[in-house]
Amino acid sequence: MKPARSLADALAGDSPLVLDGGLSNQLEAQGCDLSDDLWSARLLADDPEQIEAAHTAYARAGAQVLITASYQATYEGFAGRGTGRGETAALLARSVTLARAAAKPPAREVWVAASVGPYGALLADGSEYRGRYGLTVRELEAFHRPRVATLAEAAPDVFALETVPDTDEAAALLRATADTGIPVWLSYTIEGARTRAGQDLAAAFALAAGHDHVIAVGVNCCEPADADRAVGIAARETGLPVVVYPNSGERWDARARAWTGDVAFAPGRLPHWAAAGARLAGGCCRVGPDRIAALAALAARL
Image (cartoon, rainbow, N blue to C red; front, side, top):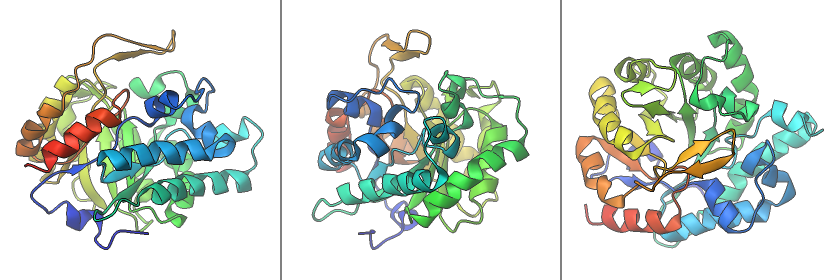
């Protein structure tokens, strides 16, 4: 059941809303094998109950926005395993249905964000952390449009245009979603004060200005310290609510397909983020329900 309020209206409140954490790490904690190039999207076909269980774990932890398992789900990706367009469309719609089914805690509104990951996610080689794929904005828009249209038919509350590595892909995604009737948030993956492709972050955020369907801008899938700095930049450049959900602080080694380094994500960062303009806050890779529960407890006191 959809919440009574739109997410845009909810963002006008005083306290930030809590996003979920990393879907892949929760699925792995449940015993799922994500070694396939489709990553968590494979389970939309092979074991959807596991995806719903992962969403439920975050809802029970206090997440108010659940992000669907469609980040790496594309027509092209499923075609590679012999899945036809009709079945792929059903799987994309299922991603929204599974999140909606998990969004049932009593006395609390829970919104569903349909994930639209970058073109690089299809390549499954870490390209989303580099961007600049050699495609034009028009070509990127053509890639994203069919998936966006199918997800829109499933009626999510918002599109999460997430882990966007460069402004070309941001422009393509904004164009692909402009006529769907579904609001969006635009979230870059960054390094320092630049996009992963090396573009100035202030200019990247400014790209969202003037797009009426954009209800929030921000960053995800990045270092927590980089997220700290980015929140204020996003707020200043756009005047929009800010979305922030960094990784744990560990780093993904695409060649070794393993995480390295130390955990730096701390729920105690939330007051700083909120003071700088964040109205949607959560975690990305390697941030699990325990940290989301701590974030939700802190948000309730702000």
